[in-house]
Image (cartoon, rainbow, N blue to C red; front, side, top):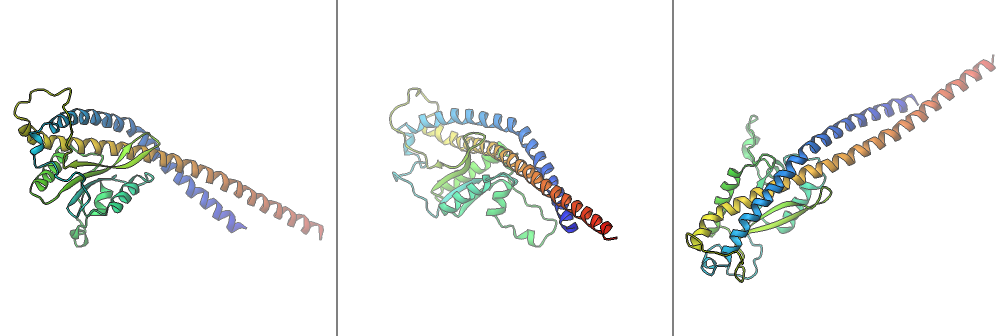
Length: 284
């Protein structure tokens, strides 16, 4: 019985340590939530503005001659499809990373550009790390992702598309619905979609629409990517906050149950000792 008491005391101490850890991580996630949400909303505003310009240009008959439009009415995933996969830098955030990885697996795409440490660990294999103990993996952090990094990826994908090395580019990310709900989603960037009709906001473009489309496309691609990375990070913070709140609640419940069991075992031991003392005194 002494062994049971010692084991229960050890388990209570372990869950108490977990409780402090999950509580601290929950507070950190809460402190980042406001900043991450503001960045996501600003990214959505920029994305809406640049998307309206590109949508107006895609309605132009001249622009629809561009190589960035597909001749096929319905694009399908092929071996030349490229996906930019946005995941988190850390774990302990519920199904945030797993949901994105599951979607990519179901799509069966092999050409992947990862963003976030978890995505880099899953989709890249650095051979140097097996030989050099001081090797540090270089990756694009989803938390500290910059517009310059988005522009580099944008130019690389556009050049590969123009030269025929890839035929489709999409971004897999988590879409922010609410603090309780984040859904994996894919947004296709290239090829562009032909829009019919004339925009109510259409005006006279200078330079010509086709030239303007060629100039603005890298900015548009980078703006979409940067905005979706910020949205994904907001989803990561929200998911981690909810996961830590749930873990804290479960740890508290386990501590309460173990404390109750500990008190029962301890009370049983005290009762047994009293009974033995009384029985020993009565036998004299």
